Amino acid sequence: MAGKLETRNNIVLIGFMGTGKTTAGRLLAERTGRTFVDLDEEIERLLGMPVSAIFAQYGESFFREQEQQIIRQIICRSNIVFATGGGAVLLEENIRNLQQCGLIITLKCQPEVIIKRIVGDTAVRPLLNRENRLQVITELLQERCSRYETANFCIDTSLISTDEVVKKMEDLITIWKDSILLAKSI
Ligand code: S3P
Image (cartoon, rainbow, N blue to C red; front, side, top):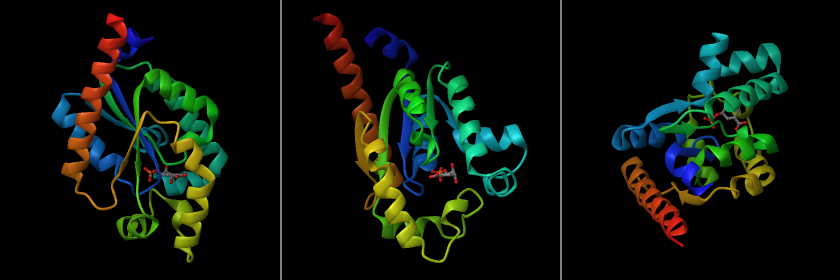
């Protein structure tokens, strides 16, 4: 198992909307020579429409099915940074598949900061296209926190820059690789 992870060399980012998965993931991929893959972008490309239109036209459960299918395909790839959508962890099968894929890092963030970050960005986040956003965010976070806790590591991005987030991720990757080498040598 450890050897398999080392060979695949993938980094998976999970966490709530607005925590910086796409921005930090893209930079991490650039810095570490991996290919960046964004789950929402893959779904949008496949269906030829923005996430908000998919939700409006086909509903959330259809969107979740697309997430499930695409995760099944993407986990077969190697040397990627894979940024998932905030709700991708809702399905247990997805969590199991992502765990097979590589190192999982959760990005987390204070709800008040999330609100500031997602302003004007509702095309990807129809679930937050509501008046009482803070309440919606708090409730969704409560529902999902145990899922986000399934990651190997967690980084709070509330008060740090993208650059700092990426540096922390690089440190965690080193720790992860060292632990694989150690496990192999025992
Ligand atoms: C969702 C998060 C979004 C997108 C969709 C649903 C969620 O992705 O997949 O709007 O349920 O948390 P980001 O986490 O990249 O914003």
